[in-house]
Image 1 (cartoon, rainbow, N blue to C red):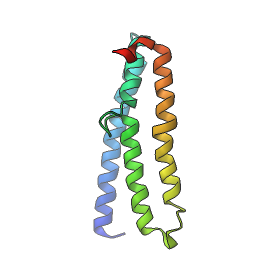
Image 2: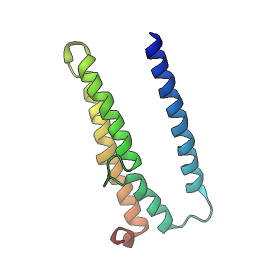
Image 3: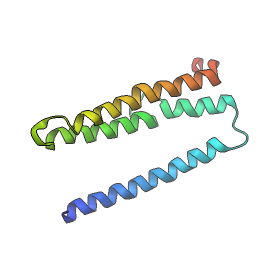
Image 4: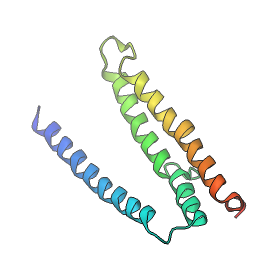
Amino acid sequence: MTGRARSRLDRVRASAGIAQLAFQQIEDDLAADDVDARELAAILRELREDTDVPGGLFPALAHLVTAAARRAEQIEPDRDGDASCPLHEAAELLTDNAGQLLSWAARSLDPQGELL
C-alpha cells in the first residue's frame, strides 16, 4: 500500500470513528426514558429525510455506497460488475427498503406528524 493510500485509509478510519461517535449520541438520545412516540417518529423521519440529498442518514449512506460502486465500476477486472453491482444494490436497499421501513414505523408512531 502506498503512502497516499495509507493516508487515505487513515482519513477514512478517522471519519468512520467520528461517525460512530455521532451514531452513539443518536442511540443515547433514542434510549432516553422521556422519548415518546411523537419524538421517536420525528427522529426516524429525520434519519430518513431525503429532500436535500444527502440530507438524511440513509440517503447519505446510500450516496457514499454509490460513490464506492462508481469507483468499483472503473477498476474492477473485466468490468464484470462483481463488485459494483452489489454496491449499487446495497445503496438501493438503503434508500428504498430501509428508508421506506423507517417511514412506515414513523407513520405508525405518529400518523399526524407527516402532515406537519
